[in-house]
Length: 307
Length: 294
Image (cartoon, each protein chain N blue to C red):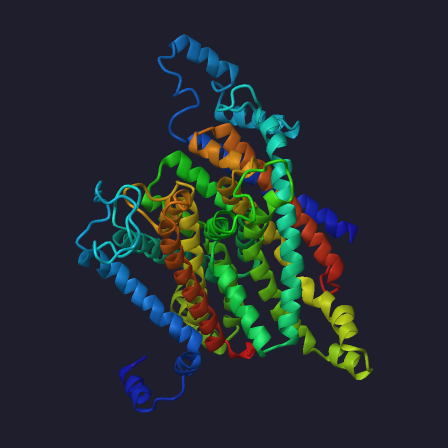
């Protein structure tokens, strides 16, 4: 088991390096440079500036420098927010995004598994049909469509909830963003749970459990749930990725000052270091999370061989 | 197939995989309904803009933000620049559907070739190719696409290629899995015994037999791709004004929703309906072609 974890851990590093390399060289291949906006820059000053940012070195050396700075948690200076480093911006934005994304993830898991299990228990009956039709709708309505519609109904017409911002940080400001972020995932997880639950409920060991007279509640929660959750566990990696991606638009729509909003603002203002910093940061996060999920999965599923 | 076999096959219509699948698909009312809606939507997007007296970029300062109204001829109303929303919605639909189809073809092309090659040759080649897929799988691609858009400007061709290029990974995995089982089949063995080369076996024997899986997967990829494009356009990184797509329209609508909610609701309904239909057809096709799930 430990060996397996170690192997997966080592295996994650090349992925990480490739991720950083793609992001780095992609930025450098971009036409234009960070100082293009400074009007009538004296060539001498520009040369000095370039030297100060080490932009005059060969590309490979710059890449090495970026990597070693990165290892120390330094993402470089932001071009747009002149007095901040990218590290400071990430440190400011990430906690907000984490709160939003974490709540959405928990909501998606709890609701998704519950709905999926109930649908499986009512297989092919009206409750199943209805919940799966609703789930299909949830998958088909993108979160950036759902979010403004929710605002329109609950904030503008009904006036129950605030339309955006974080306000005093109270829960009511988080309700709409979290719901719009979680809904597609709720839909997906419930479909996933339903499918695997139906399969598990038809397997021999469940028949045995029923034959020995266990109450249905115990059969489902005690025996069927764990194996039925395996596909959900392996979906956690992609789910995290799509919640992170989703948070980019959701934060934009609701004006939540999180990392995703920095990313979009940075992208629109061509703040290359900020954009790159966010990509690398989230990339590392996703890779790390995938690693964790692999380990958890291996622990849960005895069929996985620790090669 | 030579001529004799062909006439034989025509005279003797057995129940092929495809006729079985068609029968099952046609009894699936949800899928058939979704198909009809989708055809109507597509025809409307193609023909609609020609039928309207307005064009998608024509502004009318006397008709700013009017709600849907039959009398003025603006059936879906107008936006904040006085442009007719009916034409803009359909024009946006053209772009969204076009991106969906073209980018899916790109991903189909890369994915099938990659997966079939890896699966057929197996061994070290397979290991290497699938390791690359694994690594790419862990990348936050949406961010890369946004990065691309920022750096190289909003170019519709780039959108096609970029979105297609990020969506081939699943296709490659599925195709590889199928190929692994196909290459053990007798007809592949027979072709190998006759001295047919690897590339020809992939082209003539493997790829045609992958069709079922691929068709299902293509119908499920199209909505994903449309979603990615609308996501980009929503962020203002997709198609460029005055050209539009459903994502861009939803974005414009979201900014004006307090005063003119129809600007948000109409394109949102079109986008959601299209995605809904594609997903339903994909599900229906999967049930039809792969009956063991029922």
